[in-house]
Each structure stands twice: as structure tokens, then as C-alpha cells.
Image 1: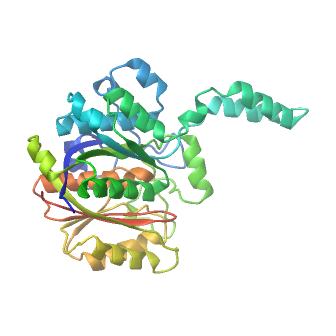
Image 2 (image 1 turned 135 degrees about the horizontal axis):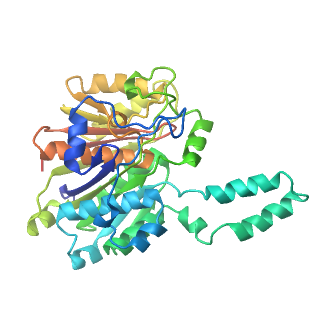
Length: 375
């Protein structure tokens, strides 16, 4: 049994703004995305827009207890529920399942700095460290590191109380969140599911982590496919959520189907020369892609993988308009695949595309390809 799976709601937030129209305009244009090159110099980031959080997170107490990545995700999830027409449907949301792809939470930088400073002159560094860790860290710090807290906050704020599942693991997590969500609806296990993720790029800790691996681009913004041998990605604060439903379920409640989400294919290869191209070609066939008119690439900019993906896509879809998501919203790791899927669905819904291919090739591991067509 395989039922058609359609997209009925989208919630998008990034440096381009919020909502479908702002992102379609950014996708259609050639202007560089909004970039902050000063705050974390020499590492540029694509910052989140100014958001009136009350629109989707009405309680100030809820806003205060969330970190930035959680607020972005909860806000985007609310936009998707609104767009699907179920924001005020309590019974629908009580049965609604949820899949989230996200990384960990933020550090308490003040506590970290004080501990490291005091450690320099401590007579017994081990005892000092144990004492400070026990007394200085807030009780919720460990919970704040867990990505499933985003799912919990979506449940609390929006009343989405069906079963939830959370994926971590950078770009592959976003691919698998979509793959599992699509498969569960297609198989008849459930009728509707909310899927997506969020990422906050404006954090010193994530910049340090990725710079230690040599993955960050430096200085001024350059287009993803023009970063050459230096390579690197520019992180972007972003969030994307999609409402997926069986076509019959959407029709029964009178919801507009924006696009049909076909096979979501994922892979994980040993990174050697040619492995990414081979994987993309296999996934292309598995996803049933023929001649897409748009290809939305989640390419990171990291060399030499990005150049290999670009060449492979030029062979696989020679007539398609190729656009890197990093040139629209920056790189959001777990959010790359959901964001690309949401933009692809918006293109199909607007009538400017008959078939859209979305790719997500990880900067270290994992590949994914999916297909969107008119509903």
C-alpha cells in the first residue's frame, strides 16, 4: 500500500524573512542573502530576521525559557499549522504526529567563562571543577541540550500531542526526518504529520566546533558554488516545518494540496573521490527523477564535495535551474533538507515548476535526494 503524500502547510523563517512570499522572492532574485560579517569576524553568518514572537508564541514565559533555536522552530511550526488551516483545530492537533530534526542547545557562556578563568589559579583543579559544575550550572542545562525539547515546546505551545520523534546528526537528520514522515503517511500508518527543524547560527560555540573541523567560510560572502578550493559554509539561522498528509485526508477536510512529496532517498558513503557523484546518481534513480525544471541544492560549500555535487547535478539535470540554498538562507545543517523541500513545494504550488529535485549532501557524511511534483 502506498498512498500519495501531499504538502498542505509551510512555515519558513530565515535571513530572507518569514513566510512563503519572502522566500520565493529571495529564491527568484540574485541578490546576496543578508549577512553579518562583523559580530563573529572573520566568520560571516546569515542572521535571523526580526520576529514578533507573540504571533506564534503568545506567552512571554514560554518565550523566555526557550533558546533562540527553539523559538525559531516553534514559530515556524506555528506558521505551518496556520497555513494548513489547523491552528485552531484542537482535535486534529491532539492526533497529529511530529518529527523534528535539530541539533543541541546553547552553552551558558558566562558560567563557562567564569569556570575556565578560575581554573587557571585553582590549587586543586579537579576539586574546583567538580564544585563549580555542581553549583554553577543551571538545573535545566542538560535538558536544554536535547533536541527533543523542541518537540516538547511545540507540543506545549501549539497543542501538538501525538507521537513525536527527533533526529540529530546534521544534514542527514533532516533527510531522514522527511523520509520517515513521508513513509509513515504513504504506508497508511498515519494520516498527517508535522515535520521540520530549526537552527541558530548566531552562537560562538557552534562556530568554534565547525572551525575546528575546518568547515567554515571566512570573510566576505561568496556564492556556494564559487567558493573554490578554500570552500566552507556560512551558517544561517533558519527554521522550516511542513504539514504532510495523505491526499485523501487533505481532500476530506478541504485542504489545498501544494505539492506531492514522492520518494525521499538517503545514502551514506565513504567519502572518497567520486563517491558523492555515484551516490547522487543512484539516489536520483531511486527517487524517480526524470527531468526536473528546478534543482534546489543543499550543498554546503565545503571542498571538494561541493564541486563534485555541482558537476553531478549538471549531468543529471542539464536543463534545470540549479540554485544552492546557501545562497538564499545560508546553511542550516539539519534544516537544509526540510527547507529545500518547503521551497520546492512552494515552487510547485505557484505553478513555476512541474518537477523539483532537492538534494542534501552532508559536509562530512550522508547524501539525500527527493522529488516534488504537482498534487
